[in-house]
Length: 107
Length: 119
Image (cartoon, rainbow over all chains, first blue to last red; front, side):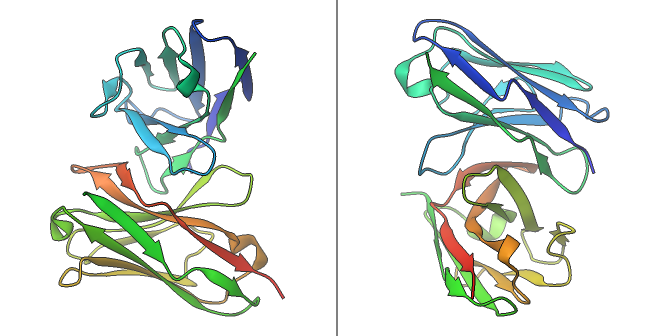
């Protein structure tokens, strides 16, 4: 099973600042990684797929990068609605696995 | 409106069974692979099971293999999860989710249904 390790667990920033979230895979997953955003009481929302492709309707302040084992989600100039929990997910091999999440909170 | 709506959750005793349903609307259900993902209270996301468009191929997490069965009825635009031999650690919100195109990410999620396993 591929383990995804997200860091940091919690990130405290202010609106307008930039955010960098990390996801590391336990083995090479090529570019087969997605990022999701989840707000309290809501289902996850797909942000980025295959490491760097924005999903439909996702603002361009969200960007993804990386390949192999190290991946980054970057949020340029945080908006108030961006404070949420972010998860990465791999599709390289079964079982599909998620990281444990990074909580992005308002400082 | 394109949506997924889960139902069938509730309180069940350990060792009991429950069947979840997920009704799809406003998209071609039979052309899309589907999955179940769960989230224990206050915890992260855990993939549970997946099924191909026709239902011929199914996949399970080790934690549920042999206890849960995923199925679908394309004539009813509905996805199912039969859960047997339920344990306390199966307590979670269960989401159904649609696969993105032909790649195993999830671009449409339901609001979830809560399953609580407790005596």
